[in-house]
Image (cartoon, rainbow, N blue to C red; front, side):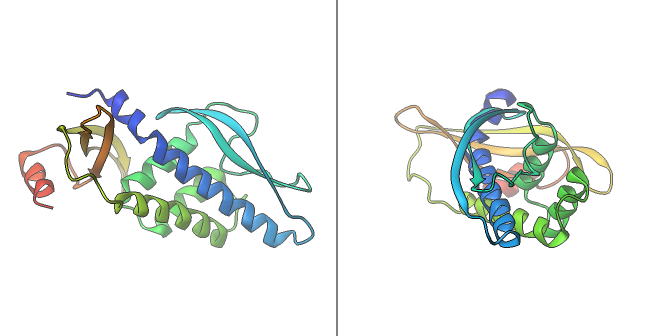
Amino acid sequence: MIETKNILELFKPIVKEVLESMLKEEREIYLENNPPTKGNGFYERDLKTAFGELTAIRVPRTRDNGFKSALLPYRKRITEDLDALIRAMLISGMSTRKIAEVLKELYEIKISYANISRISQVGIEEIQKWRSRPLMEEYAVVFLDAMVFPIKRDRVENESIYVAIGITPEGRREILGYYLPGGMESAYNWREILQI
């Protein structure tokens, strides 16, 4: 059995990719609203999350230095809000509208509803791209496991997130997929997942 901590570590590359895409879209919105300025590359920063430390996150800049991301905590290296957002998006049983509501609640009125929808849509597209990527034809070992997370829909309840992890012939671990059929872990849910 693979520990939950190790499974979360495997999610770090996709979390970083999704976050960077959302930051770029956030800067794009800023540039549209501030036409005299232009993009000015990126700077890197690290951030501690529930998924582990994300290193060398590429944060966009503008020439006027006016762009400040609402997604990243200012002058903080640790975030809980962003974890909640990324988990909600990774679970992906949520609609764009629901993710926009989560963003609006987490970040108050700093971003318009239309812009929140636009930023969250970029994140969803990145996750969908990752979920539909081609997999290797063969893995040396495949592990199936479930992690329990508190998930808020109408109310907060513990639900299992089912994860398939493959180990390549070279020994590299890779998340093959994750599923949220609802409720706690059961043989019925595993059977449904394995028939996909």
